[in-house]
Length: 530
Image (cartoon, rainbow, N blue to C red; front, side, top):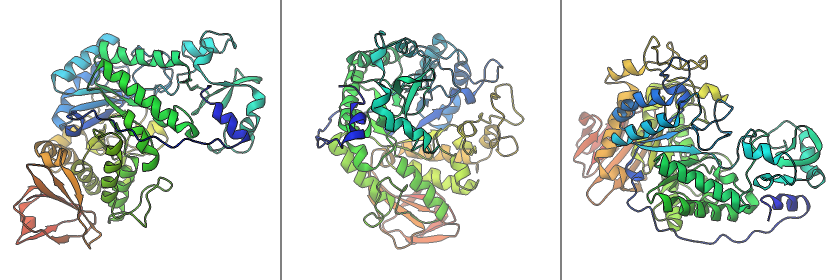
């Protein structure tokens, strides 16, 4: 069956869906991910080793010590394969390194050095689509009999007439057709590109496409020795009405990758509510928790614990307490499908406005958000520069600006873009923050160190604590060997809470704790050892 046959059905009749099968995946136990902190890097903006203005693999290798010093022990790299765009999400050669970034040999040296420092390497793997310049698609455009024609999704003009007509309705993204004509020939067959015409979708109903993808995965896991993949646009492998096919594909993909590397880490981008996400879990080690990210930022901005998340993503404000309750419920739901599942937590990433900009450029708010992130279970991800308070608001290039290593800029500062948000005038450089004990960087570093040295904060269970003061976010983390109470003051005023059976603070100022009462200054956090 053609990958998007059901799209045609939707133009005529509603297509019924089968009930999702419940299948529990029992692997990943003992995986390294729950104990790790990950660091996301856009290579182009990280460090430039050759003076061409573009960050590169050698430059990134030279700055691995920064990742190590921060305390991160895994790196997620945004796309590094050859592509015509700056962001490189339209791949034209899956077994390459983009020439601007260096060579295959440079990348192998990077992985070897990272591994020698105890740092895992995860790469972006874009398989929902290729770039339109990929040799497969260039061949497919030659006609119905072309060798790679069925690697993509095609439809004749008449069968998708209503979809094409949406182009004339509005320029709103919900109304623009995802079907595209070849070279402007509107009378010929159209190909499907969910994101845009430069990214034609692959046809995963074709077993040859699956074989190609698994071979590419084998290349990166075996020959390049990466530790895993971040799977872009995982929800869009098939359309929504073929969700069960998507679930089965990802389970198959994970099985194939585990044949190559048993402890492979696969994290997926599935931005949806819990009900929609849950069946995907069997095909992934982790999924990014977008709703949690929004809830953390929103809570700090409002100065109180939020009860809801992004509109339309399924968090019912009438039935849910704090978002901590929702995290606990989600874990239970996901572990019923995959008992080794680990949440992938974050504040923002390369597709969102930067955390500091969303937090009113307030360093104390940024510290509060970081403290919440790093005291919750899962694998926390830090977007490069977040640890020094880099700023940025969309469009996308402005949230991917060069890292501020020192002021004034040294030779390694990338210059491919003129920054609008993160400049020498707006950001205190890493070099300066390292020397300042009260800096955002050192706050991140101390929190990560405490997280990794206390089992309750990595492998421990999460338990909500109900308190009347909505300015305080309070929860327990409990492991076999340790129990801690975590308290975050989300407000701009001092707050006090009774703490029973308290012993000492493992994070925070011990002067805050006196005679069973914990008094937290504005935006401060404490971890109490029980």
